[in-house]
Length: 278
Image (cartoon, rainbow, N blue to C red):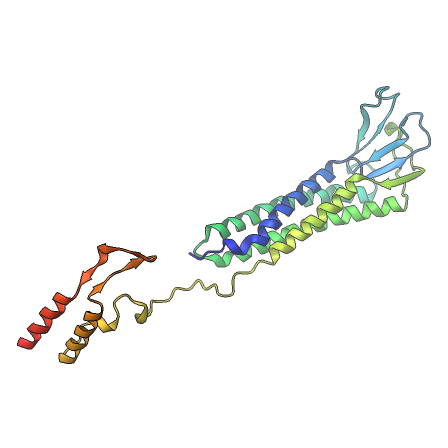
């Protein structure tokens, strides 16, 4: 079996980056800090700051929750709500797709690395595993980039959201900023993109050849010089060569093994004299 462990160093690094990127993407999906709204009316939103994610809105309030501002007031929403803007609607779907694609790509790449270190008999399948996993990871990165960039565009242009009255949220803020979830999503997308490229870069060594060739006669332990030919010339040639190697020893990895010492003098002399008598 071929030794291929040294060929997967870049892919091991890519797998570590992949795990970090996938975890960051999952965290970004669950965070509420996609948009940070600064509001002027602090009657209910007493902290003056509200956070809008892709699943819910939250803010601190003395009136609605607790006077010490240790508990957030949150209202969830879903894709069925009519007031949800398209960028949030798309983000809900694509972020889930990114998590699924990343998990599948991670599994495929894991099996590819496993085959690298196990040195399978058919090593030509290893690039196929890494190619499939790399493509899935790149698709996961793209699935994060689209909603992150779209929501960042909405924040920069200060787009408003028409929340219903039950949410106790204003329709538009005075100002809004990019939240930590978008920043984490950008880092996750970069990590996933880098990891996918690493896996797509895998190549088998140029000298690698999985075909098996027969051993040359020159490389054999018993060469033609020790074979018994017909006629006196054959006997004499074998006799001369046997004198040179009458005490042949087979070595295993450079260690002398006396168990394989064989004497050919007696056999050669006996056959030589028998042939001379004939």
